[in-house]
Amino acid sequence: MRLVTAIIGLTAVFTAAVLALGLVFQGAFLWLSPGASFIGGRPEGVEGAVPFGVLPWPTRLAYAANFTVNQIPILAVLYDLRALLRDLAAGTVFAEGHAYRLRRIAFWLLACAAAPILGQVLVRTVGHAVDLAWFRTSSLHALLLAALLIVLAELVRAGQMIKHDRDGFV
Image (cartoon, rainbow, N blue to C red; front, side):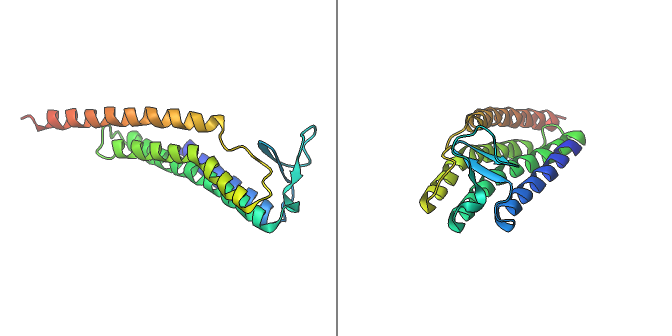
């Protein structure tokens, strides 16, 4: 559970740092290229790399919104995972809320899969799109994991029903 808490904190700090680099510090050390983005100096051997700071402000704001839309579901998944692990660490197995929490994690994973598409719609609406990746392998992984978690949620729900029936016998 502490590991997940640390990952939540690091993800939040990373998100804030990238947003600060992009918006407060005029895009210093941020580079965009078709299909990727980079932090640091100019990437060597990357075709079409553009410094974030040269993009017009509406485009920078659209990319900041795109980045935020991609990060929020990740933070939500980690938050719900931490709560689930806290219950399990306390010895609570097949608790009433576990199936619901697993379904919420699956929902946030679906949001993770859809976020790059929504972000690209926003960036392309504003114009000056550089990073044109709208569907990533990680989106496919998120979809598959969401499907598995929905099945697991149903198994947990069945386990809850069995436990409830077992506890009801005198």
